[in-house]
Image (cartoon, rainbow, N blue to C red; front, top):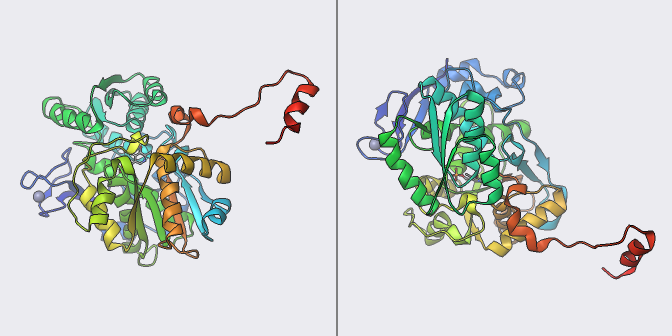
Length: 407
Ligand SMILES: *Cc1c(COP(=O)(O)O)cnc(C)c1O
Ligand SMILES: [Zn+2]
């Protein structure tokens, strides 16, 4: 049994029964799952949560699922105290939430695990998605586990490692000659025509809920407190809003103190419609045409941009965009200080964090969590110029010649 009560329109408040539906029939705004928090709070305690599995499913009672979960072992990823990186950036209490350590190497496993569980409940035998790469891999993997058919649509210029990392699960993999926004528009037409569970369209309200577990986990890993500052990436903006919602719900349920976390959203300068709007002081997000190496978050027309902006504003946070060169420097900095190899989305976060700390927006003594949402090895092509090595003969002399040379 779940405590999900209904779907509710985020704009006009109209309610709908729990069903595969993403947009309000009246105002076309996104729907979200609402819960009976009173009943939920009764059954919840820190002690009980601590006894749950070491995965995102320890928070099952706070998720909108009824059936047996489709789980690859996602979540409860490390929250690393990043002292080396913190020293570099002038932050005394810096943590890195390393969510690249999920089964398919990105936080997308959280959202997909919930959405596919829901797809099974709703009786779909086929799932589908529009993806910049990470979602496709995760949907394909979960569909394999659930014995469902999967159609995944990605832009044709997706990184090779992400294609291989998707194809291995044997979905129907369709590369579209166009941008992610084109792929998304295409899928919005397909969802009308085919009775498929589109993970990020008709199942989006459930998909969204999976991201909340990132907020829950971080608070639990900090011994039940919310961070002072959060730095996270945005593509559609949904993840960013749900980290906040996760923290907010914990406070509502009485598990942590009222939340006073400053939420900072980061994007690549080549695809920063949300950051642009923040800096322009408007709540209106103007679509852009993405051009950046951070392909996993290159969304020009972010579905939840407005809501992400509101979270950044209302939390007293901010927004920061970084160039492709800064992204690569961010990837290198995280690897060389903390031993964590992230993809460009993580480089965006670290480069953004660096700027936010340097400008004094994030202060030295603030407990800050940087969210690393995807792993580096699948986006190697952007780093091929950075490999430097020495070639030697298999002899001592040859090695010592290299060691003598000034480095
Ligand atoms: C999808 C994705 C995001 C952001 O997703 P939202 O659409 O903003 O929820 C961030 N990082 C990585 C690595 C992703 O794959
Ligand atoms: Zn509405």
